[in-house]
Length: 166
View (cartoon, rainbow, N blue to C red):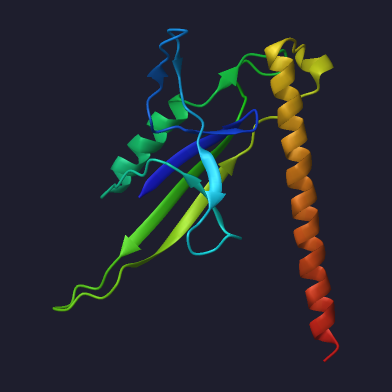
């Protein structure tokens, strides 16, 4: 099972659902998805309404991946002619089941690959207007990611110190 989405300007967009034509502006746009709690746990969040594509071969999965990559938001800047303007999430879920006369429940593993948008200095990239606003959002989200990773690292280190003295 493959799913793909991007985070662009603080909104989540499905990369495997085609953009729809807006009645008012006549432009093709994707509807942002919600990030909400699961039914089983209010602490666990998921992207609601994300399209999942079932693939039976590696070749099919790669074709889906390539289709999603074409939908990623990119723009030319002074630093990079094809600069990704969103954080891309590529989620792979491999499911398996025993082939007995009485098959058991499905088991499997999940892998999420994240392609972060580039952080560019506005002065060097010569960004302006909407691209400059995007760059600010990208840099802000990368700062928050860095804070989360730092916090996780501190929690991990403190739990190791607490257990080593026993």
